[in-house]
Every structure is written in structure tokens, then in C-alpha cells.
Amino acid sequence: MIGSDEVLKAAGREPLFTPILVAGLKKILPLPVHRELKPEDFVYKKWSELNNANRDIKFSDDALTHLKNIRGSGGLTEDDYNEIRNSLLKFKNASTDQQKSIAKEIKDAVDSSTNGKGW
Image 1: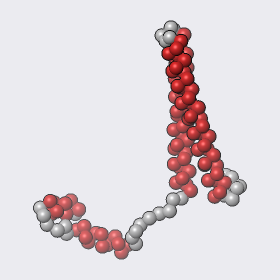
Image 2: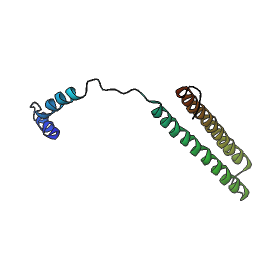
Image 3: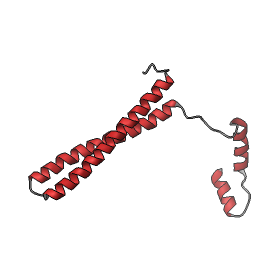
Image 4: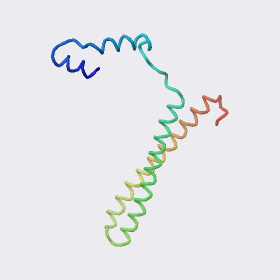
């Protein structure tokens, strides 16, 4: 039906079905339709961010291990090794700080929704 309305619009004519559907939806769903953010939504979003931070930390650990192996085989100069290692350590530290911050946000949200009783 809506596809037919698109064809009519393209031909310069008024749509037939869309106004009827919109009128029906307005009767069923009072506009504006909105929903307040629930604590579960916040926690889910933060949980996803926490998983990303954990993945970044694991990546850093794996990359550092691989870097040590490359260094041992003589594939990098000492300066290159130190520069890459320092960059990876900074990334890992930033990810760890982010992980701690997100975990605290989740804990605070849970505590506030349970009046400090926790899980």
C-alpha cells in the first residue's frame, strides 16, 4: 500500500493509503510516542561498552605477546620495539581506565535503583 503511494507521489498525485494509516495510528498510539530510558537500557549499553573495553585489553595483551616474539626473532630495532610497546601499553591503560569507569557507572546505576542494596 505504501509502495503504491510512493508511485502516486512520483507521478505528482496525492497518496491514498498513507493518510489513512497515519490517522489510524494516531487513534491507537497517542503522539508523540516516546519511552523513557529504563535502567535496563542503560545497563545494557554500558555492558556492551564494558565488553568492548575488555576486548581492547585482550587485544593489547595479545599484541604485546606477539611483539615480544618479533623482538626475540630480531625483526625489530630496539627503538621500534620500545615505541610500539609504549603505544600498546598506553592503549591498554586507557582501556583499563575505561573499563573501571564503566564498571563503576554500572554499579552506581544498580545501587541507585536498588537503594544501595546492590544486586
